[in-house]
Each structure stands twice: as C-alpha cells, then as structure tokens.
Length: 537
Image (cartoon, rainbow, N blue to C red):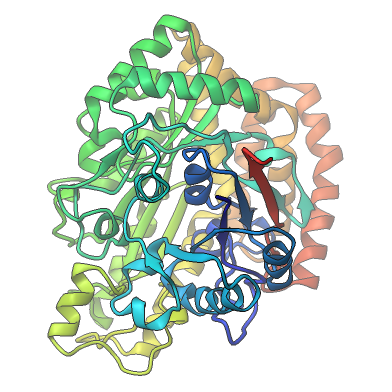
C-alpha cells in the first residue's frame, strides 16, 4: 500500500479562486510579525511538519509532497499509483483542499482520500469535501491504526530544518539566517485552553495535550540524533507551552549538563510557566528565545494571572533571552477609546519581535461557538479571510469591522516606528547576554553566548550600519539607537569588526533601498516544492 501525503498547493501570495490571498503569504514572520518593517522584514518559510512526522512513523511506502503546484500534484498522482492520498491544510485553505479532492477523484479514482490538519475542525467539513475520512487531532496514531501498524510504537522524530530560503534586505541569506536550527516537536495541544486557541481545541481542549516524549532523556536522545544529522546546535521546540512541563525540562537540563551540551532553545511559553523557573535555570537550559503571549493588559486568561509581562520581558532580555511577544487586537473589552492605550502597552514591552493578531473566532474553537450562540458571527465572510490579519469576522460591540484592520495595521507600524527593526532588537539582547555571561562559571553557558558574540563580531554589525543609514531621515530616534548599538559592538571587539561593518554595510544599504523601491509591499516569495520518498521500492 502506497501513501501520498501532501500539503495544499501554491502559489499562496496571490488572490485567486481557491482562497489564496496576496496579503496572506506562506511566511510566518513576514505575515504576522515583521510585515511593517520593509526591507528589514525577516523572510523565510517553514515546512509542513505534521505530514513529515506522519511519514516517519508509518512503515508503508510513502511520499511527502510539500508546497506543490496544482500541476506538480497532478503529475504525482498520474506517475505513481497511490492507495491512499492524505491532504493536510488549515481552515483558510479549505478551497484548495476541496480542489485537491476533486483532482484525486479525477486522476486517481481508486485512491482513498484522507483529510487532516486544522481544516478538519471546520463544522460541516464532511459536506464541503469529497473525502473518505476526515481526521481531527493527532494523525500518527490514526494512520498507524488505519494501516494495521502498531499504534503504540515509539514516535520516530525526523530531522527537520526549522526554516528555509532565508532573505533579508533583498538578499538571500545563509541557512537559517546564519543560525541554522532544527524543529523538535515534544507534544501537541495545550492544556491552558484559551477560548480563541485553535491548537488547544484541535487536540482536545482545556486540560488536554498529547505528549510524544514524556522524559527529558527521550528528548535529549532525539536532539542528539538531529544535531548529528543536521549539524545544528539550535532547536526550535514546537510545543505550545514547553516550559509548563517543568519536570521534563529540568530532566533535559541534567542530561545537557552531564554531556556538556551548549544548545540554544527557542520555546513557546506562557508568562506564568516562565515564572516557575529561576532565570539561572533558563540560562543553563539554553533558552535564548521565548515566544510569549501578552494578549492584552486587561486579559483574564489563567496563563497571565498576576503577570507583569513588561517587567518579565525586560528581565529576560537582560539575561540575553530574546522575547517574541504576541498581542491580540480587538478583544471584547477593547473600545476605540482604549485601543490606542492597549497598543501602547504592547509596544512598551519593546520585545525583540512582536506578533499582532485580530481577535478571531475560528470555527471549531469555544470562542466561535460562543459567538455563534450569541448571533454575532457575520454572514458572507469567506473562510479564506479569517486568518487574523485582515478584518473581524464577528460583530464587535465597539469596533467596526473596517476599523479593525486600521487598528491592526497601525499596531505593526507603531511598533516598528517606536522600537525599530526586529534584527536590531535581537542584536541588542544578544550583546546583553554576552556581557552578562561571557565569564560565567559554566563552560556551556560561556560557549553559547560566545556563539552569539561571534555573529556580532563577524558581520552582523554591517546590518546595523545599513539600518542606521536607511532610517536616518525617516526615523532619527531609532537610527540614533541603532548607531549607539553598532558603536558598542565595535568598541567591544575592535578593528576588524569595524572594518567589516564599514565595508559591507554600504552594500547592504544599497540592497535594502533597491528592494524597498522595487517591492514597496515586500518581494513576493513562494516556498519551493519538496518531494521526499520513504520505504520506497
């Protein structure tokens, strides 16, 4: 039995009849985090990790087809005989999943069609798609049972590069932007159960999650394997609240200490989970990037109870830990009179990166069910437009739908104008970490901050030179702060660093200006297609 596992087809950054939207490219950062930062927006793509995980955990011959075009998808169907075609997508891509089901029926009518991913949570999806099976929740166990394979076999983790095709200032960058990372998926779901959260709802809701690896030792072994295969020491822990499972995290730390591993970890975590640790524990664990939900100053979510996220952000940064904040625009208590103060509070975090998203009742979440029961869901809203970066899909008590986009766009712009490019903020935090821990008693900590220092010393300052001069006329305050950081770095490491900055900086400035002039809204980029066969005879 042969299995084809495919993500939805591209292109993505265009307006078409299948639900693609020009404003919703297949890029996390340029879409939701750095999109107002012009040529300094971080441009990269990420793989479809779910289908990669499934492929490595079934014995049947299989192909992963990631980011195909329609034509490439059809060619795969006609060149190989597949008994099962698995399609994965999110709700905004339901139109593409529908079209792919049609193409399978046309070109491979003998194939059984299985649809998974967040699109499976859409109420009534069975009537929208011509599929044989709709799978909501974790797909590895489902496929193993469907194929008659041992459902409780250990989870095999593939070696997954965290991102690919990095670009900055109009130029292609090295792998991982010079800091290649691997993605590790310890668990799926989140027990916090925030009412708007699609991930929590999809994997069982409040109080539920699915652990792939229960112990730090298991995680350590996986990370060693991936370290060897991908030659990386940085890991993006794709777990909705990694630090919440303190026993596992500290067990991992003990193994890292024992074997002298100076790894860097990028983690998701709630404010209250972070507060369960001493800063020293986080530093020794190698936490260098935390994605933390700020949501709103007045939010009542358990994960934020009694948390001063501004103070916590600044404390983390003082220890060299970069903070990716996430703020919701248009919550129930927001009004036109308070919205500006809410955004100012978010910006006051001065996080290294900041995601802004509209309060969005996504089908399948408790929030959507509540709004629907109240009769507040708007009619005629295309599912392709509920990605959280456009306009409300519900009737807000105080904010008009068209105004929601104005507030959202303004939040991105104000954060950029007040705090500057994300890359500058990251380097500021990296320097703080180096200065604090360069003489640390723990050799692992010294080695990790030395890696950051090496980046700053060997060329990253040239990007500061370019940013400083690019913003000199339009934003003198931020330009001056960038110059001060560049000079700090040059004083720290001396002549060669200064020489590199002055030689390479003008080249980067020219590239940034050229890219901004040619693509004022950002260069349109599409992820390349990946074809990976396993157990293929």
